[in-house]
Amino acid sequence: ILGKEKDIMDVASFVTTDDGSILYVSVLYSAVPPATYPNIENTIYRIVRETGESTALWTSMLGENRYDLAGAGYLLTVNGDYIVFNIKYCYACGGHDAHNIVVLNTRTKKEILMTDIGTITLLPDEGVFTYQKLAPGTVSCEPGPGCGDDGTMSVMKPEGAVLREDLP
Image (cartoon, rainbow, N blue to C red):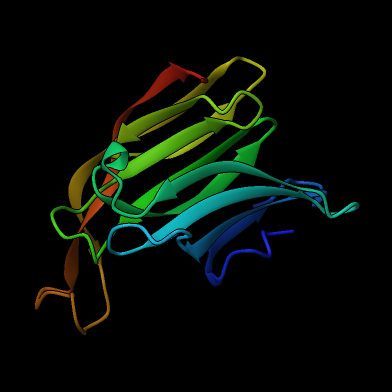
């Protein structure tokens, strides 16, 4: 189902359709043939649970420049032919903290890459998705690492107007 010819390192994340009939899985592999450091391939699959049929929908090498030296794709939501995933920071790649979100049309493989957005809602019947921009803010926290003496920590959180974009 997930490519027997590759060594699976980790399952980064998964989501299912509302009815549970389709599973989307983000898998990390050792790249074959070996690539540049960190030598990790990330593939997102769609798996039809009734038949076990799997289809690779998206593939990226960790650290790849098209995603700002980013790491693995972590699935957030699915609606119809569209999935949304967050591309986390690649610790091994150094450089910057990416807040990359990809909206992928699983039928056409077209994608939209956006940065610093949250509260994403897919509206395929209207041909759009909605989102809010991320802005620096603070949240309450329990005492411990990362929590300030005042009981708060800095975060990026959705704020402001709800914006609309066409789906890919």
